[in-house]
Image 1 (spheres, one colour):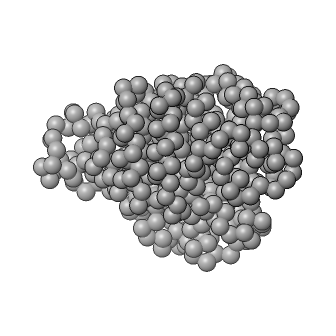
Image 2 (cartoon, rainbow, N blue to C red):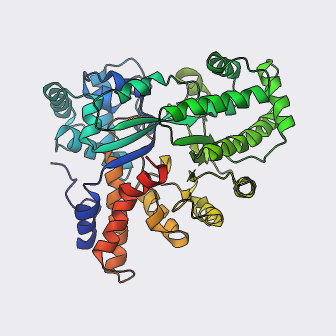
Image 3 (cartoon, rainbow, N blue to C red):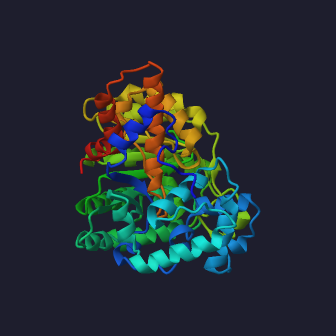
Length: 462
């Protein structure tokens, strides 16, 4: 039987009451993920558990590599069953890794299966889940609705097809799927296929020959995204760059689209200006901005060439751009165009620095206008979430926090929200039992409800 019990991660009775009475039944607002919207629209029944559980989930791939599993059993040509069995074998001894918990929760919540995931049970779990899929006609819609999800913000490049979202809106789904606007492929001016990306944008907006044309094209696309419901944007950079002169950025852009080489310094010039431009544009249209910093991407050149992006070869960066982040926020604030912003930080050493910085730019435009985003990616584990909550409450206001997200490509990732909610309730329950805060559970419980769901609804104004 599974080790996941009703009091999982809840170490005292107060924590249990907070979770059961205030957190457990709240809906889920997934305001940042990488789910494929076309899969949600097509809503096809899955063939087997591998398709749902392992296909495209580089969190799980990375764990398997750490266990010495041959790549043929991860992204190679082995059968779906062989890959699934290899994952179960890997997971059986991955004590302390969040996947050890998440996968067990996913098995219970989505397949009603209480078997512990390990090599001995792998065949039984494979058969159980596949039979469950067939009997219950499991589709993306059924998975999302069974998780009590109300809103999904997918992450979409500016040239992605918006018709998909219009067609999803016509479906009789109990949840909404809305694109978040992302211009990272236009940001990365040094990328080899950069001209191809610009070509995709031109096909939607017209000829782009200079920075002025580019800015107009991006604003046009943002308006089109807003027309299908967009409320959020996303910017992902390893670090924040200095705001460069517009003229210098224009020269770099012209060089890039003409096929000339772009140096690392030139790329930083463009990214510094372009980040500022995007923030200003999002402020103009009232679009909340999710800024992700601290990821060092594509470390393994051999596997990058073989498998491409987002396959499990990124890591935590040690870059420190807190002063440049300060200058960016200050300039936008001085110009009256600083949007609601969620800063996601991948380096836990910078928690307090970023928390104290965003506190300098709060206003009554929104409760928690400037957010310190939840523990993310390599930090969305028990250790990372507990540290995040301690740092957040030490220098910020917990009742303003917009709570958890999945940041996932897997439709089975929604138990992560309950993983976070249990850790949140345990954190508050510990303080109550230690006499460090009020024992009024109605007051505390309302904060739990708000962090779990309500604050996101209000922040994104959906």
